[in-house]
Image (cartoon, rainbow, N blue to C red; front, side, top):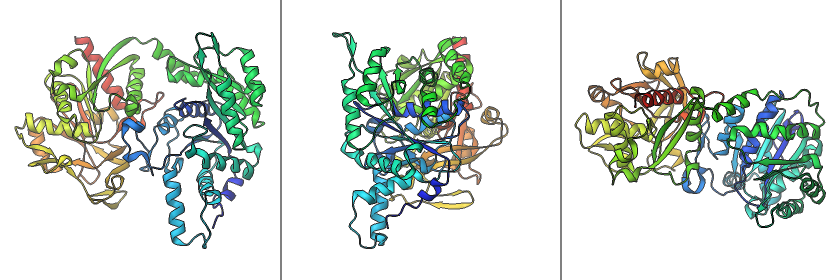
Length: 555
């Protein structure tokens, strides 16, 4: 069976598909380019959808080291995905879904499952058509009334892992017709100081490689540190067989939120409309992006916040967190300067050496025992010195353990994540309710399968600071964790000055903890950073940054 189950649905829809590939080198910013193009198409009144096709063989990034892959982004429906989906949501405001993220691991898993089930009726299974059809079916899936579906192809043209994806999108152009498809290729124009010029040859070779796969790019997005002379644009257009107006300069900018404005000024969105024969109409309204950029460039002040974690050597591991703090600063018209602190450093030095000058302390999520004691020392410092504190996921769990050990006096309080604990204040939860149905996990199951993933509701204590910050009694936030604070310790925590300010609807799982005796001390089991956007900052980060600003004014 090699039929495309979703093709007929797409043929009956209006959606046009834009495929974004990358060449020359990796990490050129294809995700940011896709997100920015989506945002300016929205500013022209179009409805968009963004997707990521990742060539790696992992089923998802959930078990990959942050040092290799960076942040794992989580969607409402519980998908663990590439961090580029975070860019998509932050720039477009469109919530990502399970159908917006695919990997080679998932593709081959589906193909093999079908083969074992006998769905191919004894046929020899091959990359073409079986693997490429699965890729195409993913591209065609769950398309409704969107005007544009933007699909980013991970990796770099020429990588062996990406070849099936390039073949698949070539076939998509054949299936739907070239008038519904646009290929955008992101390249690099390196500047050679000794020669004093930009070099176009790498871009020419990259396009020729793409043409070998049967794909002729319609637009080139050229990353460059310096402006691209018109002569160079003309040369690129001639040798790469595209229109000169479709050679778009992607210059370095001082903030990523300037990118939509910069691309629009270069004519990117107008040329996309022209390619598809659409009426460009009036210029897009980019005022919200201009206001955001102006606030970032001209803040009323500066506040310093320490992030005490274990992956601080690779800041991509905390991408959404970094942006959410920036969003909190934008809302308060302040610049947030982040001081990244490796938690292991605090285990061997006086925490005050690193924390005395900061106005707020944040302990993010993480897995594993390394650096745990340093995180708890940072929490203890925040509690004792009235420094605004936000603990996220594991950061909340450690805040609870720190209170139990150092305030309640239960020195054996710990978590079963690292082995048997005398006082398992934090333990593995194997059953919980979601949307009225019981969810069951097993401690020896696959790592991703044992997690509480995706959006879950919480009910807030009406007298809590959290309730005041959110302005409502019930919230929905995204989770990614295996272990939970044990509700049976609630009374002991209260006696030690910490209240459970938010719980799961069934009352079994603590979701938010806070200290009423502290200016601002909140821990949350979920990941609020995943839902923050520059034009809709998350209320927790807005309030946290405001508390840090108030602290700075007292110093």
